[in-house]
Image (cartoon, rainbow, N blue to C red; front, side):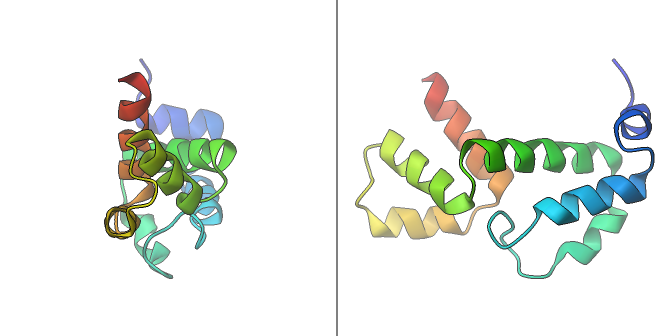
Length: 106
């Protein structure tokens, strides 16, 4: 198992390039907080790698957080429950993706 630093150097060459890649994925379609990506410069390599992996998977499978929320609500049989959807809308993309994967396994 490689360390997060060695993975960053192998895949992205530097932490700055990884941060830029995560910021490019962290648009309004996937990111909960508007314009709060400036703090990503101080996040650990492991967390940045996880964010990149999750954002990439969500973007490829669903395209937007809203479609991911729709998939979770449908999987739970609560597709028409607006209150449930509004609660899901407050969660981050990694948390939503974790919920979806859990529902998919069950």
